[in-house]
Amino acid sequence: MLITDAMNKKLNEQIANELNASYHYLSMACRFDHMGLRIFAARFEQQSDEERGHALRILKYIQDVGGEVSLAALARPRDDYNSVLSIVQAALDSEMNVTRQINDLVALADQQNDYATRSFLQWFVDEQVEEVRSMTDLLQLVKMAGESSALLVEARLMKMMAAKKD
Ligand SMILES: [Fe+2]
Ligand SMILES: [Fe+2]
Image 1: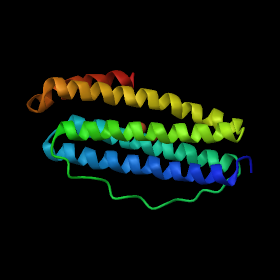
Image 2 (image 1 turned 90 degrees about the vertical axis):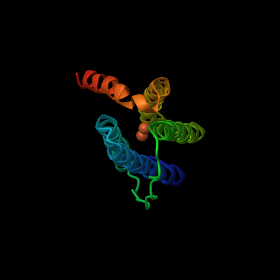
Image 3 (image 1 turned 135 degrees about the vertical axis):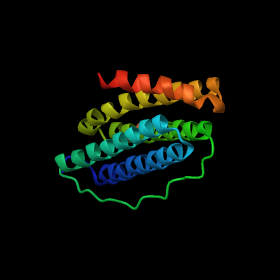
Image 4 (image 1 turned 45 degrees about the vertical axis):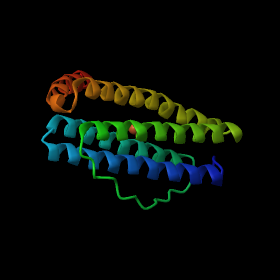
């Protein structure tokens, strides 16, 4: 095995963290759908898929370095949101939290001279910059537009999602 037991354990925890993030985004997507905001719902569903992709990326890495994958139980995601602002704020808080988790993993890799894991984690470091940025942008838009103009933000969001696909 190319990684230590301690690193293996932390990476397994991160699989659960990413899946919890995925589950949380799915719950937020359902709240948006309930509010009639289908574009917000689609954007958050897409984000939920991305988080699942992150979990799988870590899972495959553990297998690549001869570690053992151990899946943990997921937490029940929060679903009592009643405003667009509270959901987007929670999403940004969650991304900040994941950023700290990734930084802790990087610190452990550095401490253990684990260059393979350090290199693997760089993709996540860069990804977090992008995700915090895009959620910060969305929060700013929502604050600017106000709750009653959420549909205007949706129109903008639709354009941004279409541009991202190209
Ligand atoms: Fe993630
Ligand atoms: Fe994320």
